[in-house]
Length: 293
Image 1 (cartoon, rainbow, N blue to C red):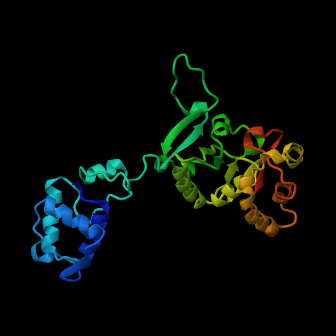
Image 2: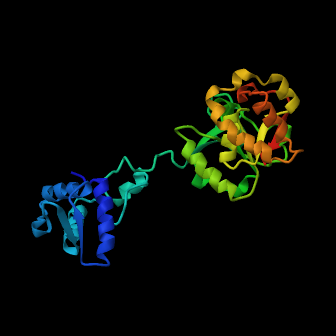
């Protein structure tokens, strides 16, 4: 029987308190009863420490518990497995805490590189317009990139290139898939780190209420959108999902706070007053980087 994670959390707190006082008493409920069952299984005699209502902890008892953990090659008290990746948990001992471990993709993102950035060539495989890499964000040297381009939709990400004239001023932009249930956590960490650089963060996604809201939430500085005249002709009520109406209040407040000549005003007015939208996959015409604030 492994030491339950909630029992380990409780014991870590007890260990901290025992540095300040000789004993700690806890009522017999929740994790304490788990601890009692674990001690009985491992022949730890609780003796007079245990009553029908409480369990009294002292340094000698914790030493016995740590002795059992050490002999079983399990991390001692004071070393939480929560939040650690499987590899890091393995370094602490043979015990695995799947429910609280860091996801294998927690720090990973999909990035798009130009073909010349990757020396890999597979005979019989046509050279793609870009090379997709799954990388750990900790391996990215952010200072090497002039701008972050966040692409909302996976199919658009696979087809995305930085060849547009509006992106020509950005040397070596970092093109990243925004993520989903598999990669979303990694991108959120990357976006936080990028925000601290103060460099441009361009959101390439749907022209709809949720898309602009996601851009704001990730601290994007610009939206990559078609020219407003082209978009006015092609945006449609069919691309305005009813479930996104709840996001409109926030964007209306954002619109009201923009200066009168701000270029984003025309876009938000089309979206909110005309109730028009357009999915990223339908974009055409000349593209513009529109400041969010």
